[in-house]
Image 1: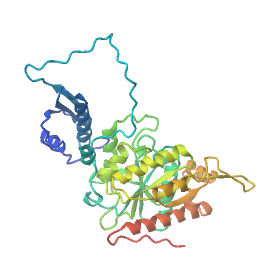
Image 2 (image 1 turned 90 degrees about the horizontal axis):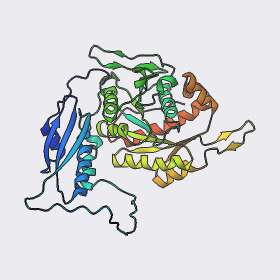
Image 3 (image 1 turned 90 degrees about the vertical axis):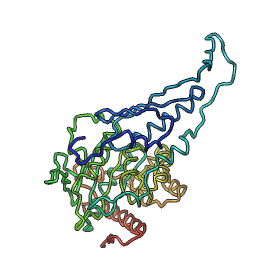
Image 4 (image 1 turned 180 degrees about the vertical axis):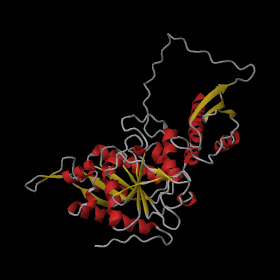
Length: 393
């Protein structure tokens, strides 16, 4: 952890056993001072395939507990008295069976999947001072997700909303640079909560404010989980009397630890998926959409970036492919929220720390329209009265 966290829960053997369903095959649990857990699993020597499955499932369940930094499962096997040990095959003997093919669709058992499912959104406690949380995601890197996050946040801020932006891309934090505050540092309150850095009317937090930009982020999953949850829960985003209208979370690419942490521990209101038109990116979009479906996070739609390049003569060139975002949206039953062309001015604005959405012009109008659609979709998801997001023309 990079700052102290109070009231951290203490791990216990009972807690770990309960998370695994108190199975008979768990013969021992060891916990070290750093939060490392060793599980001792009594395996059936005649069914080692099932034993390996139990090992994988047990490690995954224990790893999801708060405070666990590492999990190692050890298999032990005992044979009944008088039971013969199967004789190993002579090394010279060869079988002439057909080679086995690895089948697609490998997965954990249904029990493991159900055990690992995150809580329903209604069961996750709201974060004080935050009204709604919008996740901007892409299952593939380099598609412009951070650009979309920054410019959507700037568009909402221009409408007078109180907006926060959390850079959850631990390994490649780019939000400080894109907002022109790379050298800023968050303050702290008397209660030791982080005070977000303000830029362009947006309250922001990023691991980039807290680490040396030249140091590689060689962090394992549990530390990434801790960093994200602390930047969410141990920060002064707002108060019950004056909450953020919207917190936008710029997630890292993929469907790994960061996304799972957000789905399991954060009351996410909805998500938006960003992609480019080419098939390589669209294949990952399918995985991202499936992840949100399994974690019960509504997806508002798809934003396609790099849709085309327009030359000085006004001719459009589909450098990254054409129509991929629309086809994918139709296949998934989602709206295509926007197609954003390759525009040098948007790239330049991000490089110099001035979001295109904050500068009057066609680019700002484009992102305002996207933000309007997102706002309407967020309002439609609400089952109870929430602060209404209103755009003024």
